[in-house]
Image (cartoon, rainbow, N blue to C red; front, top):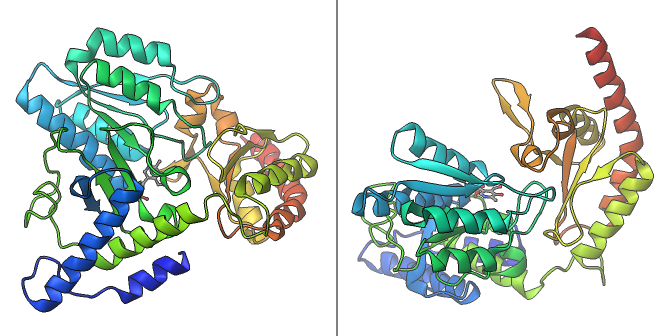
Length: 379
Ligand code: PLP
């Protein structure tokens, strides 16, 4: 957490912002100040900001809520469009609507770097625009960092009268609002230095949206539940702090982009066969790398034991690692996709972190490779 967020979090009143007594009104004031601060930073109206418990809730609300509102108003509108590389909060919400017989889902393909193919998006919107309830495309990918052509997609969607939802969870802390005026936007506090458990959906009044959660009618009756005032205050403070120090790392004079470049060079030196997937124009804080011949899960554990914490793109289903859907959509084989690790950098990262990776990597790769070869021989 950023120190500014810790201060705002600890300083927030503990009252219920819906209560009419003094403590409740004090909490409401802090909540509304946080809403206004977020709105200013996200270039929207304060009334557009709906606080949620995080990015997952914002994505679920946007995809399901907008689909159900527009589908209920006109049953001929039955199609949700998502890109192939969305976060599971979007993909699985769309899939659940389809499984329940409530939607038809169309998936936009991506190119080899994970960018939505605009020609195909344009064709789909032109052919099926009248059937589409919502188009959901992320601003930048959480596994490989690829930035999507949001301004172009927003123009295409607008031309067909289709509401756009942008999952901007990864990019907001770096770049503020995505270039899509009038779109619904998901935000998650813990991605830019607020505590986990707070997020927001920016939902302009022009986009109809049904609730997903029912109860006390908070947040324009679209998202009920007692509000997380301390979280909202911390999120506003964290966003302000991250936007104020845009791209600065903990290494004096070095931006996160400079540091990432040094990390890429260091990884290539330490493990010459490693293939860096992330392109230089991707989100600043992400480097995704394939280590041929290794199972990423084994490599992750070996690096963790050496004090380096990183992630795989894979998910575990019933204890079996699944390859990343993002890398597969970019054309990687399942074996290649299972060999990918993601390193994340941010405002706390320094050259010492890069040195730690460089020290740990050669032996970890060699051991992971031996383990994979052994497993292959045994099977
Ligand atoms: N969308 C993207 C692109 C993400 O990276 C994440 C989390 O990593 C989420 C949604 C989910 O956000 P949260 O962790 O706040 O539920």
